[in-house]
Length: 326
Length: 256
Ligand SMILES: Nc1ncnc2c1ncn2[C@@H]1O[C@H](COP(=O)(O)OP(=O)(O)OP(=O)(O)O)[C@@H](O)[C@H]1O
Ligand SMILES: [Mg+2]
Image (tube, chains in turn brown, green):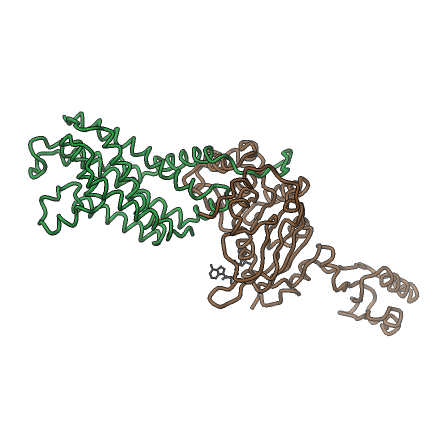
């Protein structure tokens, strides 16, 4: 048994620094399996009441990082503070404050019915949610009396979410929360996660859905080979590099030298295919104005003119390499 | 999934008594819902009670066969639920990540283990009730002090429970399944439960006497068949097994 921190458990929430510092602080985290570093000097911070999304290819080290934060695995080096506490040393004080959704399913008594399991987890908490209400909320009322092993994959995922939330945690770890959910359930879960944030719950989530990360996260952390390769708000990540492109259609064979001259330094123009033009350069109003002015001067009507910005997917693939397909 | 609920954090652990009550209820409910567990802990002992009482096995006991059979079956019932049932159930919970998932909740491990123990004890109350009722129907005359009987059963539960958890917490679930069933079978026939150790050659019997099955069975026969007081030797043997197995289980139990 770890040492019992009975007082910490029973004391009401204290408004001291432990309750106002970052929700999660990881620095220089290292974890190896069989001599291979799967988390390699990872550092990240999550402010209270915010959402951080960990992105990265399969095997990047997301689950390992999360499970170290949850106190399931022991780090080889580095420090981890969860709500100001050490996940291993202060486990007894920390566990009641966090909600956990594991990647590999509900992971609890499969012979129990959905309702029974949620009631059991509710009994661990001092101020649990009303379990019937929570089941309704995640759309499981109809299968409340079904044994966990007979639930569908998406239903298990919903139950797993409810189990993570039932104790009114201050911080939740959601490892691929919407994996296996149908589009409606996914939207519902997004709404629910936004609601968590609005009510002051801090959220760590992992996902392979870039739109999920873009829509929910305050901060996105892109991980590759156990290292952080990019951090920032979704907007910052997309802006980073600031490359943009403008495409339009016009009669083939326009003389592009004058266009290149009209553009500011660093931008370039080319005819990708007969009649299809591409301008790349820093995305700015001037770039668009220069292109439009040049077309006007040439007496050319540009059709299908489109300013394209980099998507998060472009950034992600760039950061984590093309080895996905290798 | 419409959100009208407030998620404002209010994290705190429930009082341990509430956790323990809920945990015990869940464990007991699952034991009674699982067909194999019910077969092992309730059906098989009752069938054996009837079978052993048939006059075809004339070597059993003296004049009143049922007076020998009931204490034997009680010992078997305790071994079935506290050892084999607990080991297999816990082994698969470990395999399927149940224990890991519970480890991420406010439930302390001590409360989890206590809940399991209480569920086993409650199951044993049911077992004892059924075995004794059937025994009385078969003409059993109980002797001795029920308090000593209860004490022996509790000691037996601690010893067997410790051994069961030790196996479940250290071996793979499939190995646990095989080992727990095999040991159950061996102890039933060679461990002083179904067949009195006196029927075996002396060197074997002298050693086997210190098995937890033999100690529990001997003790129960001493009290229930012969109307004796607390059998100190048997009680001490069970106590020693508990004192070894429980700390060992705590020490080596791996939760994942
Ligand atoms: N217990 C373990 N023993 C050995 N290797 C492990 C263990 N856990 C994880 N690994 C390895 O560590 C690496 C990172 O795994 P991890 O589960 O953290 O990845 P992930 O980013 O969550 O991937 P995914 O997107 O597929 O869930 C993988 O190469 C995995 O094989
Ligand atoms: Mg993962």
